[in-house]
Image (cartoon, rainbow, N blue to C red; front, side):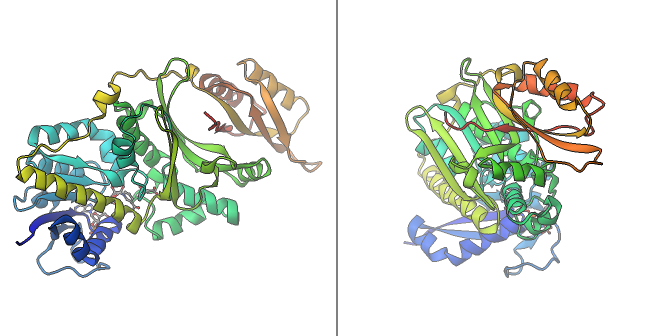
Length: 442
Ligand code: NAP
Ligand code: HSE
């Protein structure tokens, strides 16, 4: 009996698209044997059809019109691997409305238009799969949707951006500035086409929104997240972290407040104790800790960006697409995971006064008598109590000093209000830099 042929269109043939193409071709026989169906990439859309590619493609396959792929009735599956949120939205919506399986790696698109895309799938009989959108090669979406399906979650902590973790690791190991390392991250295919999405924490925040939907059933608007990237981390911060048993990581926290059970999402450079596994996850690796009421804590670690890691995740969606298509052709209903029945969708968001942490503050201050006392007094006015104060010895004739403070437990509102106050103090010469000190014990 001849195998069913599943026809696939790729919109995008860059880092991820070429990775998918390469591995689908290289493992074609194994995939066919396993699935009883043949995966055939019959169409590819790019922006520039003349650009040299790393893999040879048969004549007539490549075009420059992704919408023609979305509308192509001969295709079963459309993979959106272009990025952006305008054409990508049009491509995905069109393909979903015509009942296709759509696979995307585009977390920006999901963050901005997740509900619309899921509705388009439901209305049109299509399916939306997005394993590669979060944490690269780690199958975290499958873990939450399937492996941990019986759990309610108290927290998810994630190192979700490979580029930032790669940069922070090399800053710590080689003493380089982030700008010097960013170029390598781009050359290695880790960074977004617009790398500000990575270094400003926006990409990690997009992923956090997707995880929050899966774990808590609610699409949290991006504007409700507290997001800061890695651009302000300096060698002073790294030196403090090393001396005190921490790693600096860009950590996404998607969690419920302890008392009221309200949801909050932050993406911030964070001091992570090295004794906690996330503090030791380096390079392009991502890590996600998920705490469930039934299982306890599970932690997932793996490459978070790059051609092969991401292709691995996209191809896992392709395999799910085949199962879906085979069931559909037999008129069997394919169970589609929906987090809303598991968690509801009405979780309240926490206010800054309900979010608690310890914090690290670095201030550039004028080296004058009374400045430290004034800083401490201004923090105390917001009930922020100091746990440590340190200042490197400065030269006799220096005019400025870098002051590093850590606080006891306080609220996000108190620390932000106190920082605002310090910005207005004439002896503070630059905007203070703040990081939470992660408490990952519970
Ligand atoms: P990329 O290397 O820049 O590739 C983008 C591809 O899309 C290119 O082939 C480009 O064509 C094509 N494209 C872009 N705009 C187009 C348009 N208007 N019309 C036709 N084709 C268009 O990007 P990537 O790194 O593969 O990322 C693709 C998606 O995967 C993004 O959503 C990204 O966030 C996501 N993602 C990336 C990674 C990673 O590690 N890189 C990991 C996870 C998820 P040309 O080649 O002709 O320019
Ligand atoms: N630019 C992203 C990162 C790609 O570095 O994590 C993977 O989503």
